[in-house]
Image (cartoon, rainbow, N blue to C red; front, side, top):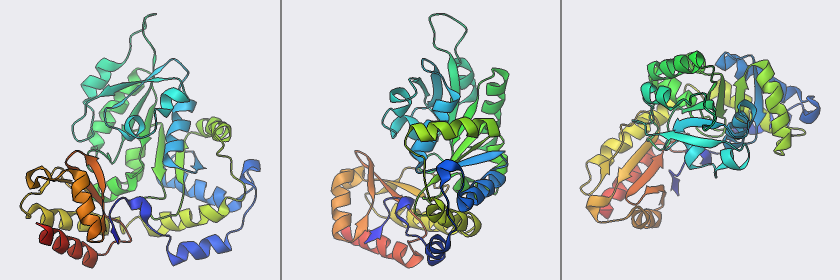
Length: 339
């Protein structure tokens, strides 16, 4: 199978497997795992933040950030199709007791003026605005890069109103590589950042939250409360170190493969590309072919190709480390034969 469902399906490299085998470990709940400490220090330095915390998943990382920043009864501002709002099981309400205030964005980017207007006044009838959440790259916008200028302006507005900014940067390194902007520069427009080790960077498990030392101290307790306290976690942290040291620069290959695939599929009658392909995600529309996304996926699976439905007539393909240019060519050939 040529698996284009997500960059989460990547397998750990031989170097990652060896690093896991050789890892020096200790009990991380006691803060005694040296390999995990090394990963957290490396991640904090990469992002230009004071401290970092390893968490089992990106969703848990985002939820810990909301729980740490906010109080029950507050409201958070976020884009209407953001991952935190769309794909995390209403966790912000179920766990943190906050309600979302959604803003329709353009390619994942919220208009700063709309963000400013959404900040609540001091009124007994209204919830307090406790947090503004950004997402970069933006998943449902097709891996779109939210511009540095947009992030700077929203961060400025947030600072003027004493509201923290959290970045769901699950694929932040994709944005940095594609835009040739240092990841620290993006992170500087936020108070806290979450990024995934287990997507394009190819590690088998885990994400990182980064922020101030005080924030991470509080976040560590929330991780424990959510059952995320880990023991000999160096075994899973070691591949994350390898990922940060060796897998960032090669993300450009995934972006090139995505653009190559999009250009080929665009030429097939009945298919169209919905997004500007900034990074490693392609959104393919099947409406003109007379197929629903699910019908199209069934046909693809019969040809040994996997994707995911992103709407009634939208299929998402995601390129990653385990998909070669030759396999991308094979996908284009097989889809062309179908039509």
